[in-house]
Length: 284
Image (cartoon, rainbow, N blue to C red):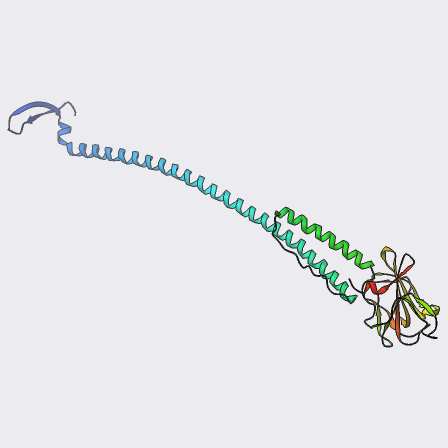
């Protein structure tokens, strides 16, 4: 079909013929289709090139965005971990200080049972120049110190066994029965009414509970650090020998048994077999 030719004459704008050539008749008859196909091919090529460029650009942007998103996620995770660790530190410090508050509450309870004022921190303050680790260590230090203080308070006879006023102090006095001569009064006498509760001034163990000569009904309690307390002239004891008792626990009822001129409590404090002035332990 391409062997069949058709002459094509090229004419100038003035009508003169300048060139003549022969082309296959098939092209002449179907030139529109051929041109259309050529244009379509060019358009397809342009489209494919544009698509490829767009895909490559999109993938590049996607990679950049994914990298940024991953970086943001890592930063978010780091912030969450730091926040979690910070929360842990805060919680640990809170527990430490809560423990201190709990110990102070326990100590103040013991003080109240002894008829003493509560312990309060005052005249403190100033800038804190320690880091979180130092604050944790500081709280642990105070916790230990307060625990040691609490243990000492447990075994030290502080406060009063009865709120009555002192009718006879520690030391030499006139004989209350004859009003003649002088005798050593090895404790303090606290005025009260028959049956008033008498309370232990420290944690310890009962070594004697019963009737004992001039003491009448008496309770003797052994404490830590060599201390011993004695509660005499009771009308009745409320504890037994060998019994462990706490500070503030009722050991007996006030009375006038033994060598007594009337209802009162005779109270003694002994350390390492030496009798001390109990009134020195009434305040802290």
